[in-house]
Length: 424
Image 1: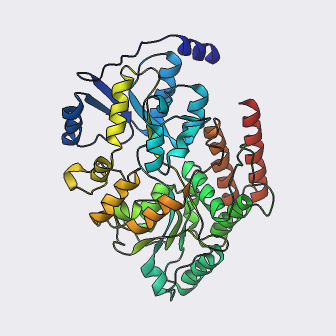
Image 2: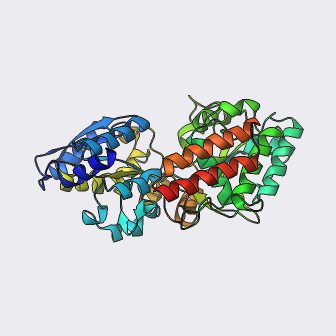
Image 3: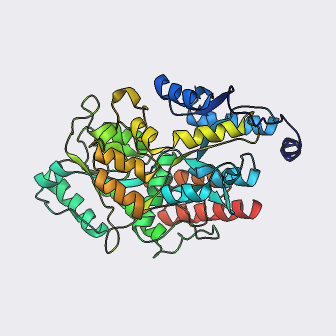
C-alpha cells in the first residue's frame, strides 16, 4: 500500500505556483522563529510574507513523511537533516535545489554542502554549521598538572586517568550512553578520530574487524565507562543532558564528541553554567595527531508539494546570507538572535562573528569548519540511516551496560547494515 501511495504522490497533487511577490510561504522547522523584525526585512525586500511554524524534530520528520505519502501540502520550506538526505533523495520528496539555486556558488561558500548531495543532486542547503568537536575544561586539566593539551587519543586517555587519580573530578569524561541518536554520532566521531569511517563509499560496514577504527572506537568508549572514566549513571544520560548537567556544571573534564557552538551558547552562559571562561575547544585527538570532525548540520529544503517553490528558494537564499546568519548567532546584538542557533553555514558568516568578537573559540571553529569537518559517511547518508542508527545506539548501549560484548554489538550492527542495504 505504501508503494502505491508513493507512486500516486509522484503522479498527481497540488500544482505549484511560480509567483513570488504578494504570497505567503510556510516554513516548518524545529528552530524557533527568527525575530519578527528580521523576517519583516525579508518581506520588505521581496514582497514575500513568512509564516514560521515550530515543530519538534521527531514530529517534524513524521509530518514531512505523512504529507508526502498523502499527497497533501505541508510547508514550502522545511528541515532537511544531514542524516535524512539519503532517504529523501531515494523517495524524491524534495526539489533538487540545483534547479532553484546556484549550487556552484553555494559550494564555494558552504563547506558542509556536500553532506546534502546525493547522486549529483542537492537535496537541501545547510542552515547552520554543525560538527562534532572535543571540549575540555582547561581549569580542571591545569589543576591536575596538565599544561599541554593532548593531540593523540592515547595521551588524551592518559590525561583523563591523571585527572581522576588526582581527585580533581571523580569521572572526567562525558559519553552519552543512553540509547539515543547522540550515542550513534559520538561513535562516528570517535571512529573518525581513530582514523576511519563507519561505512565505506559503497555503504558497507567497516567496523567488525578487531583492528578497525570503528572497533577500536567502540572498545575505547565501553572501556571508559567500565574503568571509571565515565560516570556510571551515564548509561542513561543523553548527549544534551550530559552537556548541560555534567560539563556545564564542572562534573566532568571533557566531552570527546561535543557540539560546535556549545562553548558560547552553553558553557559560557552564567544562567546555565558554573564553568564560564573555563571550557575551550580542543582540536580532536587522533591516533598520531589531531583528527577530523564529523559534520551533522541542519538544512533547509523545498518539498515537491510546496505551493510557492520559487518564493521558497528566495527565502532560503536570504536566510543563509552571511549577515543574516551572523545576526542569528549574536553578531549584531541580542535583538537579532535566533535561539539555539550556533554557527553560520557560510564561512563569511563565521568571519563576521569573529570580527565582531561574538564567537567563543571562533578561530578554532573556523579552522575546523574549513579544513576538518567532513560527512559522517563517505558515500553520503544511506537511505536506511534511521534504522541503522537505532541498531547502533541500541547495541552500543547494551555493550556499555554489559549485556553483550563489544564484538557482538558490532556484529549485530553490521548485520543490520547489510540487510538494510540489500533491501533498499
